[in-house]
Image (cartoon, rainbow, N blue to C red; front, side, top):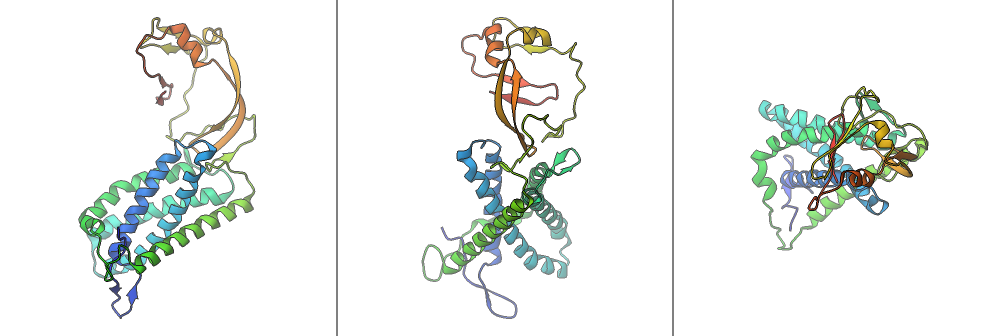
Length: 300
């Protein structure tokens, strides 16, 4: 597949290594790859998946370089031509893109936990990235054929030398930005887990942050109940004391929050297996759905 195009000419002569069409194509590829690796990081929690986080950071550096080049080329032309409709979409898109990238880089290089409202900078990084998707679709829709159509090369080779140079330039830029953020992080001297989360003191109390911005509910321990229902022989409604009577256990483990902090502590509680044994799981049951008082839910 050829990701480059034939050399395009500047208004005053000369050539450019990456044409506008090729640049749009690379922007689309980088954003798609960043979304894929970004979603993958939510599931990649073991050390053998650390490469996903590294790749995400390098791709972000490449997107920063490509976006800066796109703004340098397109914004003056759109302003001079008074293309207000395009600017109405492009300016918020540019702003969200740079804010999301900036939040991610500051998170890595800042050396400490930073909160803005109900979310950490890492949370804002993800939220802003998701917010720019509708604007990106509106922006790319009129240009979809230019982005999807791949031009040939004069030599007939599958990829041109200019395409290789452009690809190499973005790769070098991505590595450079990622490396600079890492160096700044080392200078800050606050350890980070391979996931990017900041370590909190072991054995402490988790900070009240949430990726989804749910409020912190007020719970009366005396009236709180745990419900177990569905494909079970006996539906249960347990008070806190009744739950503890099933037999507790302790486990030393790392809690890595999507909000960007991690902590190794000894956690105490009742194993889910004890709950399921008490309720009696019916034959054919395939999964367990858990729902908290905040509305957060997960399937196991």
